[in-house]
Image 1 (cartoon, rainbow, N blue to C red):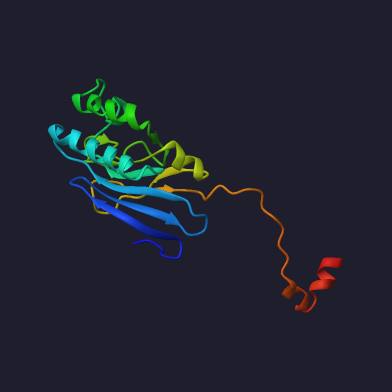
Image 2 (tube, rainbow, N blue to C red):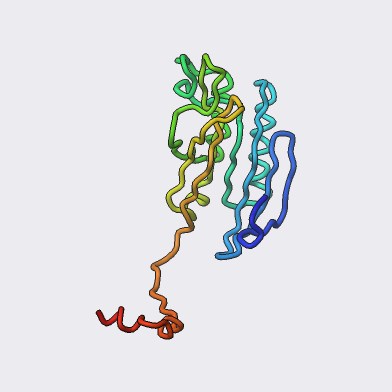
Amino acid sequence: MWNRRVVELRDHLVGEFLVACHFKNLEDGFEWAFAGVYGPTVDCSRSLLWDEMLGVCRWWNLPWCFGGDFNLTHFPSEKSGESNFSHAMSSSSDLIFELNPIDLPLVGGDYTWSNGRSFSRLDRFLVSTSWEAHFSGLNQKLLPRMCSDHYPIMLDCGGVKVGRRYFKFENMRLKEEGFVDKVRS
């Protein structure tokens, strides 16, 4: 599921609405948490998801990324034809206040779900400021919908922020026929 030459799984948690993993990047030692989310479809269970998300953040105290189908729009503009805040939207305000998540830009469209008549943004990646600070060029990309009522989204991390790159010369190039002549010209 992940490249073991890139990240090492340190720990994991399984909740009712999420599966979370504590990872360590092998290249730079950066430790972080990721949780795949499938949110409840009924409003009365949403506080359980919020509790699980807060629990992940408190258990590991690491930079984090939550991604998946939250089964919730955060703002009226994320649902076609909606103009008022719903109770479900308001219930997420405590979590937003406590975690201060960054909802990364969605490239390629406004909605991630459709039944043909209405459209909503139910799927997303939310990241902590410390997680965002480690990566450059973060965004979410809407991918073509194949057979589901959801459009898949991909998290594009762009890469790890690194310091100034240095010049590296490989001596084996000197043995290549014509290399020195190419450099001189």
